[in-house]
Image (cartoon, helix red, strand yellow):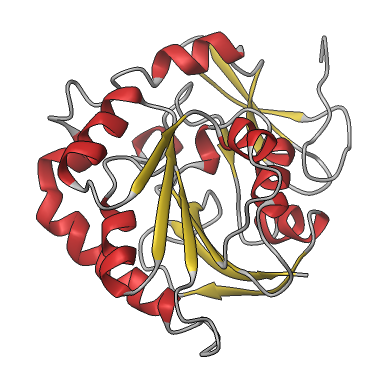
Length: 249
């Protein structure tokens, strides 16, 4: 394959062609099975995709706020239950905070909550509707670089990592903000899930170039282990997705 890329999980070269869809090539690592869009979008292209990504906060998550808040409250309660009792006000970071739903639910559950989000329209929505929290517009890499002495007891990152172009840079930035024992709750689509449609183009999570990285139950834990996470547990996902909880080593 011309300009053959290296696998972001295992470093192997010479991936196998997986699918060509609407002029875009998807490849799969012959060694570990990691699947990705090749070539990946340029950083400027990614930034452009997430400038008002939800049509003035009227589409996607914003069209079903009540449902989103119910799910967020359940996950926030689960996370607060994992916090040591000695921490009276644990700190939580939501990476890819969208409209601030999980951040607000985390505050209600007892966290001091912060959200980082690339889409400026989503950040504006979050600041307007959930003003008791902190919201930062930008990438997690920039946030970690600009706040080297900041740390969080819990990090939540749901349906975000599939959008990034550099999974190692992304997870390394998250890890840099977590002390030993901190909890990570991470979700992403699962390309290897038994309920994924046989024809992948019929899967609602197959969405290149917005979704450019595709993980499964083997590749995502391997990525986390590379960046100092341990005690990685997979929660039941009836839909074709991965839900992982891990601790910073």
